[in-house]
Image 1 (tube, one colour):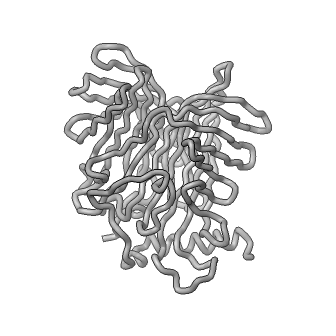
Image 2 (tube, helix red, strand yellow):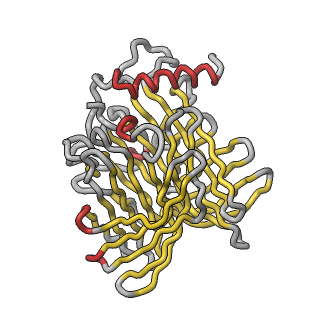
Image 3 (tube, one colour):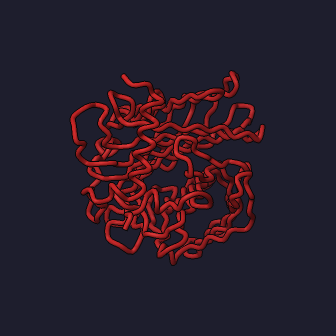
Length: 367
């Protein structure tokens, strides 16, 4: 077997070949209306689509109240639907993984990333497991998801159980990301997963509990050409409701959307005309990027007015395996009102395209 560093180096070179558009002529299935979700099948991979990711974020704390945020993400980006040979080392997909822990009390952000091909079991996804080397999610028949990851100086081992039924975002089986047909994803979430387990930082083990959010998206082209990036918000609110909202920036974006999940479990799709997002405070990172870390969210038809504020300023992820891929992803707090009643909450905020290449370079059609 080739050393891991060799497979990563080759994979990185081929990833940049892919991003340059030279692999775009291959046939991949777009995300189109009418998709019917089936579980647990859809927890696994969808190799007919070019782009796929499994996203876990959460806020957890010790019994004494020491709070942490975490992110564990697995990406699959198709290079060619049919490799030229049947070798296990032949590159069909590039597999990335990102892992981060925000130590909010210590104001420290820990992060790491990996890049692989599937190879002979190096990375992959199935109904029961998603993995990149020894970073993995194990999925049980009862709905439990076990997250395991470790890097130099930090690690997690968490058990997640769904607190509500799965939520399908968008309309008619797709979450539209642009004006063009197929610039969309199939997108579902577990919006409030009861979480418990262990975090390890610098050999100190913390028993933690809290709540997590799981996203799974798959499609072939997510963004219109020229889309610089997106701002994505998740909120688990104190009245038992959850909220997901995203906006696309640049190009012919304009396909902002969201989903409100009521305490009863009722799902309310939100078009871009039903909410507003206004940045109110900007933090400049050491890399030179300027990220809005405080936002005003208004959903007038639902009587919701929220302020979203970063729980810690520096939660900027700079990928080492894929230079040029940088973004802000971190724990946030919410305060505000819903139907004239005070409300609080916790969640996660992701802001991409504020540095490096535009996100349409990574996740667009290339057209």
